[in-house]
Image (cartoon, rainbow over the protein chains, first blue to last red):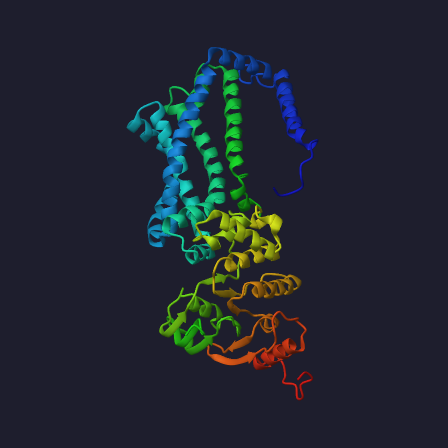
Length: 257
Length: 246
């Protein structure tokens, strides 16, 4: 909510930029800087898009990818946040585990691809596993940091007004970390969406990543670009959806200081 | 016994090698407003922690009779709760919802924030937030109010305004009050008794009574005289030979 309010006139600015980008794309393809086979025109991509929609493949791929991301990401949230809470409250355990968690966080989840295939075969499972590996560790670390940042006076108040352990968790700790955790959810969901595409290229039999790989194998660059556009748009939509969480009245305070 | 709801008797407190208090004794009467001033780090906040039973003394004993509420130096309202929810924390043990609403309405009127029940703390000014903190601590049947430099983060004018507010609120809701502060003016304007603590290990260095009905004006001669006495005691002002104000 920082900065000046955006006027309604300014709201069309992104559209103008988009239009200019498409125009440049159109010009480069019309000038034949690259051959048509490796640089599809906007028109060819639009046709490919219609073709994919008609065949129903695009829809299936989107559903497959979203299912995997949602499953892997949800697993990471429902395990990572509690683990982060626990480590955030226990200094010794935190000291013991943090280096290992940092190690796994620094490891590209794609390095797990060979093991994912060996352990889980091909299909949903290895991809879900990779998305989990990509999201779990950053979420744990973000939750730990958020818990550590809670001003101690809030716990003092909880003590003064005789909160029990459960109330302290639900009425102090969780609301206090919510803004930071939501920011981390946005970052991690973006990461998960990047990983799903890469994972499906290698360990998939469906999904947007697989579609891109399939288009490349069939030398259908128009379909490849079509897949890229859909991936980008869905990525933005996921972030917008999570961004809505920051507007909840009891969470907004975290972004307005 | 009920005449001294707060009693610190021959108390010593050590944190490792640091001795904060050595044989400290303070007794506070029902309804009395005591301000505690002293050099930084002399243990003023530790004294409040003893009185609220948050901290146990290393030796000696502390007696607190009655329900205690504390107001802290830093923003301690829950930012994820509205003004209403924050204040109602103070009425958690009251089961009757309509009675809660009635108390809340009275309290909002007292702190002049009638239209702000559904606002969040970050939507309020510093002075308004501090009034809500006071409201949370004053609501319900409490007996003792412990204030840990509650106005130190406010600007000068707001601080003076808040002092007047507090004095006014205490007329309506009398409490036994212990105020820890760096602000000698604040101590002299608000308190019945100003206790000056020494450097660590802290003892009561001197006490000044302010025999004047509350609330008072900041520039009342007796308030000014007390400020002068306390500052002289702390070596921050020279003793006047023949005091202009008697």
